[in-house]
Length: 75
Image (cartoon, rainbow, N blue to C red):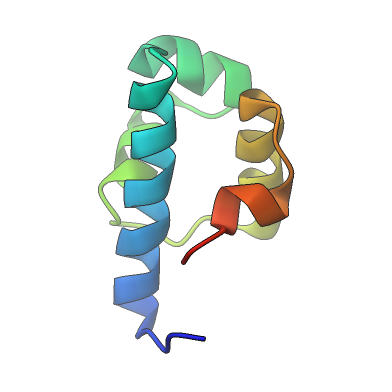
């Protein structure tokens, strides 16, 4: 298991979320709506500026129709 600083972890999680969103062809606004988060918070998550809560990550995983484990796989 890789060890990351909190900042590095936030960046890795954000990169993973953005990659999934782009891969699935979901617009930024549609994704924010699907995950029940604001568009600006979506941007902060994807750019690694914030450390989203577990409940937010769960909402994001549900928006992608995947498990939380799948969302965080490889990080």
